[in-house]
Image (cartoon, rainbow, N blue to C red; front, top):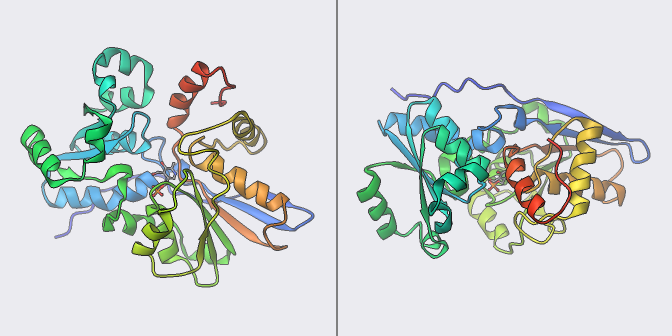
Length: 314
Ligand SMILES: Cc1ncc(COP(=O)(O)O)c(C=O)c1O
């Protein structure tokens, strides 16, 4: 019989954030960030069916990849601990493994993963680029034994992760004209597109510069009711500036909703900028998906201190 991981998490609801009087536009946020502090947002969606599958295959270990502040690494460690699975994190940046004590003392994401039982293994950036090569995977099997492999960021074209992301939208959401989602690899938005209604417009806000994203999404989704808004990446992946930080802090003060600086902060900055510049028709109902990622704020603040930039309020 098919085994299902008994995920006992809170379910997200749509929260009305603002009604813009002049344009009569309503902006709602789907609070996927409230599912869990670590297995939050799209991480929960991507892991849900994969954990069930790992349990069904009687796998004892999850192995995955990520950067030093990866939301996916933190979420995999938390989910593995919850379901009694060992976890191995292959981390980009060999230098971080040289003084592991110092790394854990200064990096909350990795410290969280390690204290939740994840075995961390640091590799060079060059080796990391080849992480999907069969030879590299074979070497990992020789070192760590058999494992259930989760792709970087939790999606790639992993059908079970996409299936989980297809559950982000529900029947009530068919009333929205626009659904907005931040993009890293394109997996989350692909799931959203698959369950959207043809009359809805799905807008993806890439968190990085990436011309390849459209073709990635087309590999997974056959519908055509989506487009990418590429003006709000703030210079690239995990790049931020004072304006974005001020926006995130102001948003939190005004609406009591935290946004992360890598994904949801950039998306909401973009949505509000577009509303203010009349890019949406009057009376539009917009639903922005809060994909979580708040654990990454601590890591970003460490970098901001070094750069002498203002910090994100927590
Ligand atoms: C908080 C958050 N939002 C959005 C995304 C983008 O998701 P995807 O890589 O599926 O496009 C990520 C990355 O996985 C993320 O961590």
